[in-house]
Image (cartoon, rainbow, N blue to C red; front, side):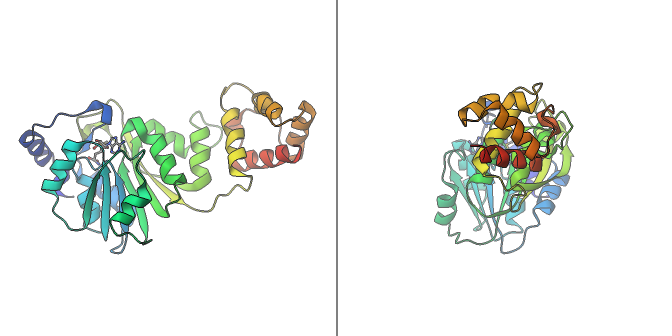
Length: 287
Ligand code: SAM
């Protein structure tokens, strides 16, 4: 718990600076020390870790992480918050950068602060409007994050962690689980934020590891995406346009299902990542 998540501290800072929340930036500040402790514990921070944070807000996570890690580099889009943070956070191991995390080069930002490949972790209470693109950037941007602890809207968290045969299972589950081992750290009620959002949240731990699927990634993701474009369609029917694009006949498509040992009347939600991988490999063989 740091004073930066204390409700009276947060209110006094907001008042001191006459701060107005900007809805467009998804600003909901965490004011619960227990949730904060759970996030920091899940990150398993060591004294030599570097932490990259998106959206420090008033610094609740930033200061808690900085108390355990070597250095925290935090990117904040709101210039007013950046000025407040620069005044309030005087720790030498915190660097606040003004920028849009979606377009900023994270590696450059880290290196400018002196990061030279040290053990790196990602911690963020993400703005809702950018959750998926920011998570994809963290997973696909090439930085060696050892783990990613992210606070997201509850429904998005359920989708990331979902297993086959559930309504939440889909592209996001498969893509995130392609890169990482996903687990729920804790559920978070909407009441622990200022201002309270309209939805509940969840903290998830994403632990990168080598992909469990061995089909070529770009084609695998194409197969997955098209298979869920219309959830009620069978995968075979959903894949027809892609098969055509890949110069495959319907016979080739059926053969791919047979060789992958898959029932072609199944819908996407029944297929595991491994099933999609096998199917993709067999489709590519027919090309
Ligand atoms: N970390 C703080 C906390 O937990 O109390 C604030 C979290 S708040 C949900 C999201 C933060 O992300 C806000 O401070 C917001 O201004 C910032 N933000 C929104 N869009 C951003 C972007 N594109 N790049 C960087 N920061 C952004």
